[in-house]
Amino acid sequence: MPPRFSPDSRLVKAIEPSPNFGERRGVIAPDMLILHYTGMKDSEAALRRLCEKSSEVSAHYFVFENGRIVQMVPEKKRAWHAGVSSWEGGSDVNSRSIGIEIANSGHDFGYPDFPKKQIKAVIALCKDIIKRRKIRADRVLAHSDVAPARKRDPGEKFPWTKLHKNGVGHWVRPARTLRRKSLRVGDRGEEIRAAQEMLAAYGYEISPTGTFDENTRKIVTAFQRHFRPKRIDGILDPQTRATLHQLLSSRPHRRD
Image 1 (spheres, one colour):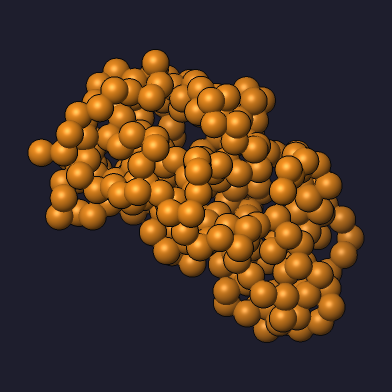
Image 2: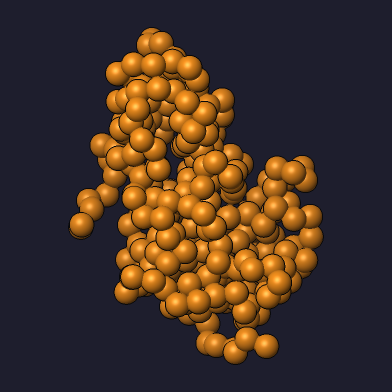
């Protein structure tokens, strides 16, 4: 059995230790917060899986639909939640981050709305972690942001706008539709290179090749899922590009 520990947050209602963790690598303290959904039909089964050694996955926190918060891994340890991922040039997201699993069956099982009690608890937990860890607003991210080729969670139904209104995360109102052409897979040119450079500047793992390839489509899709969730089509339309520009212009000051 993994050793028990004291909760890092006063909001934690129970400790369910997971054996799936290690030491953080190359960092003094986490400076990212990654939000996930569980993607399983049963919440209790999802929690059990995160605490089973054979699963080789975990997270620091688990938030049930009713708002109950469970901690599985101490914040000082490296939980195994992000997998193969990258942000702002760093590939070991697990070492840099705290992971929160939010109980929701996800896209494969109907993708229900997130209950109000659950989101209230997520906001409170995020605010507590952000305050203690001094996490920058633009480093509160979706799993799909750091692993766009593999992940969709927590998805387009997750209320990032509400989180931002309550002091969690970086967000801007999606830009008005502009009369400029849309860019799609197969297109080439400087407009695509400029958009790729903006995506990379924000943090996404993308090379500015000037070619709209499949990887670019997946990253644009992930960006839309987080920042323009009303239409997720992987197309670099004028609204998507303008919203990205606004995010870059308004992002918090980076101390590095």
